[in-house]
Length: 284
Image (tube, rainbow, N blue to C red; front, side, top):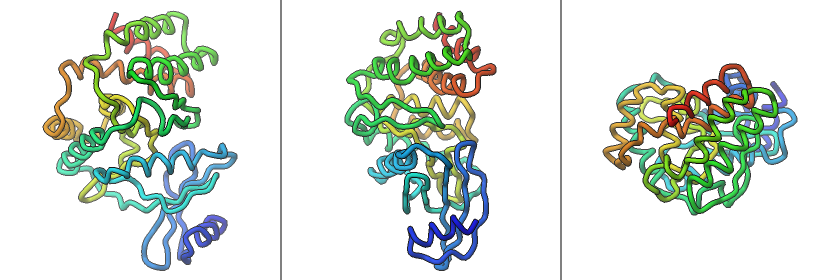
C-alpha cells in the first residue's frame, strides 16, 4: 500500500502513519489513510479510469456542498485515477439522524439547479457507464432522452431485456408528460442516492458518490425507496414537513425508479430487465 501513502503525502503535504483497505464498492479500490496530524482520509483509486472519472465525482461533490445545507464528503485532492476525501466516522443509523437528513435533503433540493441536466451540461458517470448531461427545459424531455432511453437501448443491445420488456418501457416514455405530475423547477440532486451512498455518523449522515445533476426531487426519494434506507419513513416525514410533495408522489415512485433499474439491467442483466418492465406496466 506504499504507493497510496506516497501519493497522499504528495497531494496533501502530510505524512501518512498507516493505510488500511476498506470497502469501496465494485468500481473503485478504497483505502483509509491515517495522517500524522491525527486525521484520516479516504483514498479511492481505479485502474484504467477514464481521464475525467474522478474529476466528475469531485465536481459533483463540490456542487452539492455549495449551498452548505447538507453534509457532503469533503474533496481533499483529485487526480485522473485518484480521489482523496475527508474520512467519515461510521455509526449505526438512528431515527434522529434520518429525520435530520430529511430536512437537509429538502433544503438541498430547494437550492435548485439552472436546468434539467448535468452540471453546466457536462456528461458524467453512473457506476462505470457514461451518463449524458445534456440540459433541457422540461423534466419529461430530460428523463426520456438522457435517463431512460439510453440505458434501455444499451440493455437491449447487450441482450439483457426482452422485446416485450422494451415495449413496456417505451410505452411509459410516450406518456411521460401525462405521468410526470405537476411541473416543478429543477432541483439540485444527488442522482444516485441509494442507501450505500449515505454514510451514517453519530449526529448526521454524509452524502457520497453522486451522479449530481439538475432534476426532479422525487428522483432522489424514489432511489432511497428502491434499495431501502434505514428509518426511511422518518426521513420522508421531515422532508415533507420542510418541503411538501405534490399529490401522487408515491404513485410516481416507480416512474423515477425506471432509470436506476435500467442501469442495472444494462450492467448486470439478470432479472433487472423484467423488473423494469414490471415498473412500467404499473402505468398500463
